[in-house]
Length: 496
Image (cartoon, rainbow, N blue to C red):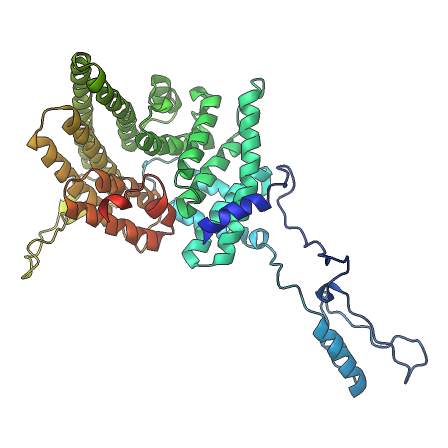
């Protein structure tokens, strides 16, 4: 429903200025083709009685209660004749059913509270940094119209889809369309006027919330990519030295992680993989283990881009392509080695935190029933907690991509195929550890990427089918139907 109304909403809101106040307007009076007013828009006519109080005197003017509505006294007269007259007048007075006032202003804090509870969850970074999601309520009263519209759109879309309320979903599309106009004007201003100071923190919130809207609603398959890319460009305008502390630093960590998903999908190198962006923003707040994993993940898009160059060279200049292939193979093997070193350090850090030194434990599987011997089932694992499982799923997805690269550019090897199948199994196990009935926090969102990697790269059909089932389950129970089913990358045509 929500995806179908987005286009209409954009056209309907095309004349709304960006700087107008974010508040609801009363409906304009609708005229007929001949210029007359429909009966439902006419005011109540008072009835003139000539029986009791003299000619021409008004005796039955309706009384209003404290809310401005017709009171019970006005609707019930002492005389039957006048009661009938008032009954007819009241019957003709009907509110226009075509106008439904927006509930955003009245219930926006309610909608936002539900979104915050989903976005926060346990902090995957295991730091004491304040979550940027906690700033959303204050933005509704202090930020500019574009940011306010973006927060409303994301919060109402999430709530509307979770509750199945189509009217709230439609309203969310209206706020989304209004916010997009302001966002385009803002980006155009920064791209044309180099004298303008860089984006403010509240302005960076807007594309992030628009991406949340697309994750939930998916009005366009690549919508989330465009918005996260816009947020990345805004940070780039500020520079790494201006992303070291405060809310902008926590936004930077989120955008940096989102950049991994964007650049792996588009197979284009990320600006956040450069040395200034991997060091300067962390001068005041050291990297967590997740941040160090992201450092490695940001190298994958460059390898994917080089793989595409190799495929082209292999056709055009075979001799040159062999030298290029050898360098790329060395680069990917180094990346795999870095992933192995990171995992070992991750286990050591776990031992230092609780003294037990375990990230997950395997549960002995029950023997198969008769006829189920060929049914696929991933390893049954218990992880230390949800953030650990989500982080582990990213690690295994990265290994799948790396070994698939090696399978493409290196001589055929059963070792690479076995590694892909093994990491796919672990990725499914870590994703399955997340409770689909309580998919709160970034953990539920992060497992979407590994599941889609399994759908695309796993050579085992049963693994691909299992990943599809988990995506479908997550879509139904998490409110993230857009990113699970329709958003890029879409692999449904591969495994259905």
